[in-house]
Image 1 (cartoon, rainbow, N blue to C red):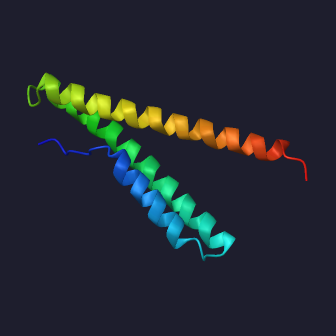
Image 2 (cartoon, rainbow, N blue to C red):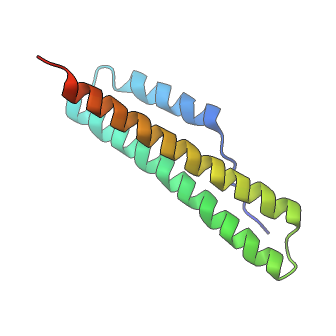
Length: 103
């Protein structure tokens, strides 16, 4: 049976908001560790989606999965990867903007 790793951007955003609220009174080091853990969890989720898509493709070749299942898991993995790439781009843009800021 295929594991269903649904990519839910709303749930991801809610986790980000709650993590931000929890770290509002935290020290900068604690906040950075919390944000790092959040990013690590998000990347693990994308990795899991890619593994699920690969597994579904293999099951399809054995006749244990339908084309629909293969397409759905592949699209979920693709969207997760695209979102991760866009977040990375925004983080790099923010870093570059900070580096251009004159004190």
